[in-house]
Amino acid sequence: MANEIGENQIIVQVKDLVRVYRLGASDVQALRGVNLQVEAGTFVALKGRSGSGKTTLLNCIGGLDRPTSGTVEIFGRPLHKMSESELTRWRREHIGFVFQTFALLPTLSAYENVELMPRLAGKGRKACHQQATHCLELVGLSKWMHHRPFEMSGGQQQRVAIARALANHPSLMLADEPTGELDSTTAREILALFRRIVKEQGTTLIMATHDPLVDEYADIIVRLQDGQIVNG
Ligand code: ADP
Ligand code: MG
Image (cartoon, rainbow, N blue to C red; front, side, top):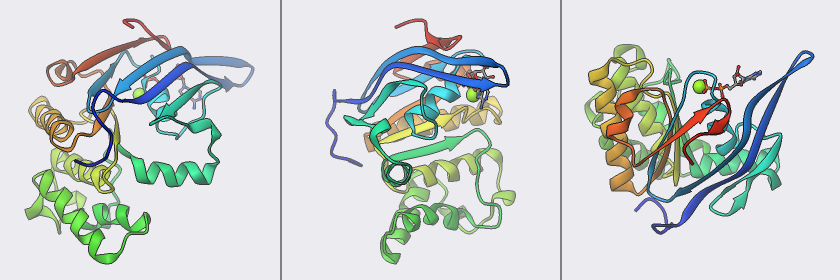
């Protein structure tokens, strides 16, 4: 088990979340009062059209963005009470992010991209090595460890990004359109990998996507429309 959080425990609690962006003289209401609870060990798909607020919600949950009003609690910890430096450290320890464009460092090998995470978290050399090799094995890339991103397919690069997100044993993974750049066969492989990680590692996953394939893999579908959840 990657963490000590039991099943049926609420890991994410979002209350009355509002995020307004100021754009010149006008306001954009990206989130208009979102309430959401996520239990530990579930795969939640956040669906909705482009502009419905998926990325904004994910960023508020991961502490990358601050809501205008409302609260986010992760394992009972209110994020708005943390300073920027506390939030940075907390994110590194507890959250794994995966993005649409993989966001790998191009001059580093797959191994170095993954190993960087435990290193930034202050782990010792041996632990960094173990975590990186273990996570690359988990995503089926042991043989590609020493390749750089440009030598790999999109699906392989996304696997490296998933290994990197897992490297510090996060309790919560947040993925923003992780299959957006992939063909449907590769997208299925990546979704199946996420499914397996949730099952085997006990990780909780929230994935923003408009990929219809996700319906076959997620436990719960949450629909966003114009900054509001439409199906409770
Ligand atoms: P999605 O991920 O579902 O496509 P977003 O969360 O990116 O939706 O965006 C929700 C709304 O907020 C959109 O209308 C978008 O244009 C607006 N928005 C998002 N980020 C910003 C920003 N930094 N500044 C201004 N408006 C933004
Ligand atoms: Mg988005």
